[in-house]
Amino acid sequence: MSRVVVGPFNRVEGDLEVSLDFTDGRVSAAYVNSPLFRGFEQILVGRDPTDALAIVPRICGICSVSQSAAAAAALADLAGVQAPPNGRRVANLILAAENIADHFTHFYLFFMPDFARDDYRGRPWFDATAARFKAVTGSAAADALPARAAFLQIMGCLAGKWPHSMTLQAGGVARAPQTADLLRVFAALREFRTWLERHLFGDRLEHVAALDSVAALRRWQATGPAAASDFGQFLRIADDLDLAALGRATDRFLSHGAYPRDAGWLFPRGVLDLPAGVLQGFDPADVREDVTHAWLEPDAPRHPSEGDTQPVADKPGAYTWCKAPRWQGQVVECGALARQAVAGHPLIRELVAEAGGNVLSRVLARLLEIALVVPAMEAWLRELDTGPFRSPVTLPTDGKACGLVEAARGALGHWLTVRNGHIVRYQIVAPTTWNFSPRDAAGTPGALEQALVGLGEGEGLRVQHVVRSFDPCMVCTVH
Image 1 (cartoon, one colour):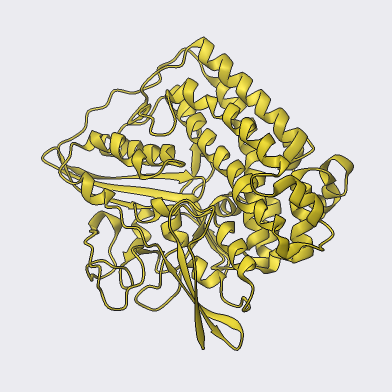
Image 2 (image 1 turned 30 degrees about the horizontal axis):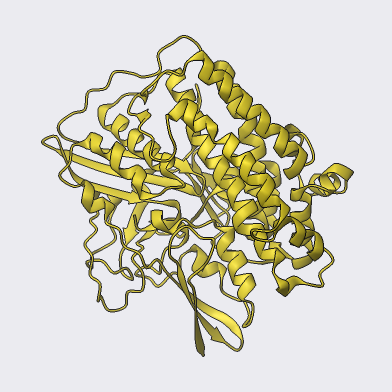
């Protein structure tokens, strides 16, 4: 057996290192190290609960709104309040803008440039891919970056700024947008839709969202405009490299529920457990965090509301700062693929039934989610009326609360305990904490650790495809 350490990874938010053990030329075990400890959970202890709204967005510069949304949800749970419909719609718009921008950025700037590397020279799709997606020089960056910047003007209109906005509050949003703001948001959405339909999909968003089977996807892929689109190019590459056979992990998919509506969610909460053949509700009480292989004080697996984060940098047997969250003792995967699998999108359900979670299905789910969410954003904008945007909030001096949201990368939870008006415990479980967790006390590898097993020596690019298919945000992982 031999060991290879891969890292640092480029085009990943934060620091990441992966150790791969090879037996007979294949990965027999993987160990994922999140090497940067940051201490936000300790920073929050002793503070006024509302300080979390200013502090947690600083965990990350690219998904700060998600952290804000989780903190606001935890404070709303503590106070026992709900946002009025207008507040909920604006909060959805703000979170969706960040999540869609993350999906868009991941595809154009993080994931697709790997296929423009010289390792793939000679493939029938290489020349077109290099011209379009090669880092720095490809035409996609010149096209996509201005489109992304124009789309993110939504943040300025609704959230005041991005990142690190203070607009999301317990009970709604801090400011009611004015008519001029809403007109600018409408224009930004219309411009972004036009760009997506021209470049990314070559078709209307509604047509892409309605693809209900692999057969329908293949028929759509063969049409002229779709075939010439960036999505079509990805599908050609995925077929040639068999990305559907790469990076299968747990086949258990978790969603906290995304974008609340008058009744239920746009994408509902739940866990799709393919090995057990069941879709069931998600109960936050079923979560435990295991610290066996983390550089943290030894402890039994605990619910986040009872957990602590005490560093032990020289702990024997540890190899990461990341805890190992488990649902009912099981490893789960989260992200756009999990959201759509739990929501029951027929194309995604067919894909995961055939081959579980893999590189193809994870990337395809992100692109599908863009086509699903942008029209929903247009609807939320049209539904705004003259009603209030925030409910009155009075925080109790003592209590426990939980805030659950869906970030671009998946399930994000904040657990808050307050005594005598001050935070005594604040624990965060981020999407990449779920996906890039280490082994637990039973020795069960995390999702990425499972997904890398079976790769061959000399397949460094395929390792990167698997890692990037999860779109890791390492700075959120150990916050």
